[in-house]
Image (cartoon, rainbow, N blue to C red; front, side, top):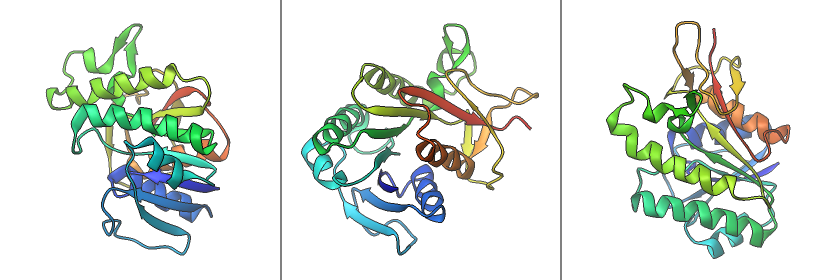
Length: 214
């Protein structure tokens, strides 16, 4: 596959790029500021791009098989620019004729009980609350989209750099935890889960999550 990847310099984005490259795909890293990737590959191309500009999106992703967004709501412009990017990516995909779009969300909007989201449960870190709410708004935008073949990928509650085990459980709208009640996954394995779903054309117009259960 030929993949267009926004946010390729981030923790998740960089690992998605490396996972895809190792599996034989080509990656166009679409970044706001070039020269920050920190790695090179014959199948990797880096381009300056603006995820919040639908016209720019359409030009940069033309000819790709799928688009991945691993941008963060913590960047410049905050919530307003982040949600604008979600809308621009969907519009740009339609303009370019690219149907497949995978969005990297957060764990905060996953359910921990019927009707109860993780971000509304006791003990959710206040520092991440705004980010979780923004991702929840992004999810609403995707669920209203019925033309594109989108997927909304949410990691476990604890996501950090680590080893690539290649073993985890894929779930849907509910938070996945292990027997100790821990919900965690390495950024490497989360990247694996995301690329795998693209390869298998899985989870179309669905949210999915991945976490360790061992």
